[in-house]
Image 1 (cartoon, rainbow, N blue to C red):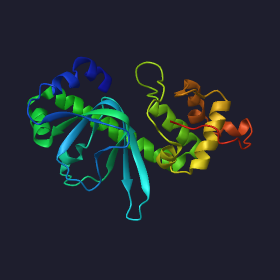
Image 2 (image 1 turned 180 degrees about the horizontal axis):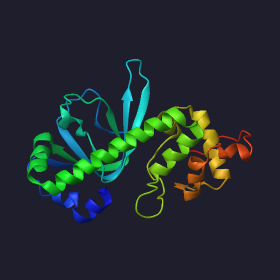
Image 3 (image 1 turned 180 degrees about the vertical axis):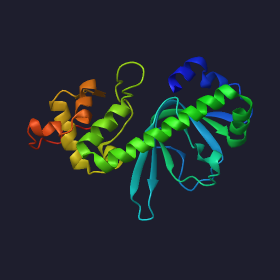
Image 4 (image 1 turned 60 degrees about the vertical axis):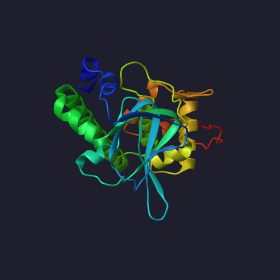
Amino acid sequence: MVKSLVQEFDPKKFLAKVGGGRTIVTYREGEPVFAQGDVANEVFYLLKGKVKIGVTSKQGKEGVIAILGKDEFLGEGCLAGQSKRISTATALGDCEVMRIEKAAVVRVLREEPAFSELFVAYLLMRTIRVEADLVDQLFNSSEKRLARALLLLANFGKEGRPEPILAKVSQETLADMIGTTRSRVSFFMNKFRKLGFITYNGKLEVHSSLLSVVLNEKPLLRKHGASRLPDDIKLP
């Protein structure tokens, strides 16, 4: 549904005509788009790059909620009465983001039915994604969770073939995303590469064959042996 709406309605062209309350900002790797605890009074639209959404506990432990990419919104919680940011959005590599004041977004949602329909459809898809993430954490092995995370990062299932993962997603970030240790991520990354599910030559490429790990009821890698391999994959 979102795909067909985007074909009929280009949010980038439309948002460019919003007028006041809109600015375009570039961020470098590691720079925060917004931080946990900041005043929430803007919505952001990602024009280029990827952004990591994470939360930090009082004890300093970080958890990664999601990694968002081009044509996705973030910070929309302010529209539902969120006064403070409950997470931190950090640029993964160079990013270009459109910042839209809350009042401007509310006005557009009221005045433009096409944009409202697109935005609601997007939020519904995000809700479905969050539910799928929860199911993934509750019932799937770390092996399957990593495979699914890599497929999502490569935009598997969207229009076209899986794309190389160009953003600098570290093994620590992947471990935080799927709720496991970096050593486990390293182990499975090496196994995925050995089986031809991924390749790494300056950039990480995910092949559609990796989907077999997600669809398999029994961990596929056990059939091929689970001997420890050297930690020789270094993600960007």
